Image (cartoon, rainbow, N blue to C red; front, top):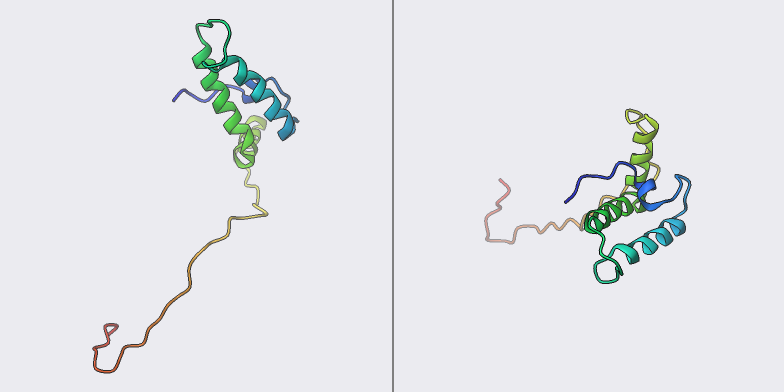
Length: 108
């Protein structure tokens, strides 16, 4: 896996205010040009650029990673932003079965 790219916005060729649709369009345009199955010319660093493109898109497409990157980019990495929609804690039902008559109770 390659190192994280210096600026994902520059790799994709979009601005920091780009919408998700603009990110998708830029990614598809560039991946068509850099992917080994569809590239038309031999570029010596195409594989490295493709990996940078994939890392940049993964960073910007995920809202949590994008917000973290934007905070780091703005120099406010130490500021804690409250999460308005935390992930729910999921658990199953609690099942309790009383001991049957004649069997020892294993809770004691």
